Length: 120
Image 1 (cartoon, rainbow, N blue to C red):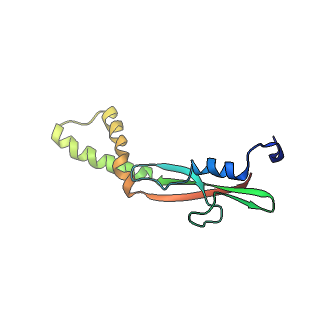
Image 2: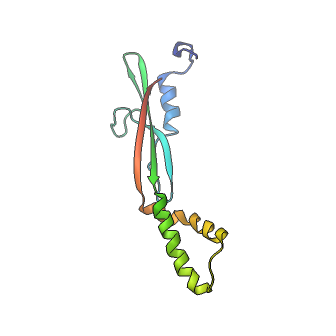
Image 3: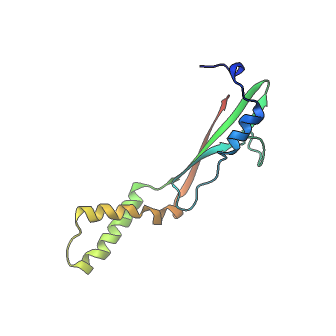
């Protein structure tokens, strides 16, 4: 593993690169978002902190929690609605296709954030 002393980049150059991948919260139909955030939690602060000669960066991950039981319940509701209209059961492929309607449920899902800080 190369030692930081062998690097040619300055803290300012690394900061600029991290800014390109700045963390943005999940959008309404987005299941996951990953990006760099301020190590000290200060809004609009630096994404790369220098403490005692060490560089510190923090990676944030946000995911939307959409339990399978919720998806299954919505699929069963759709099946119960469509079955009488057709007068016949839905094929397994059609039921599997209904699971793709997760996008309708994503805006209602809770988000969970986790992060990891590390020395660069």
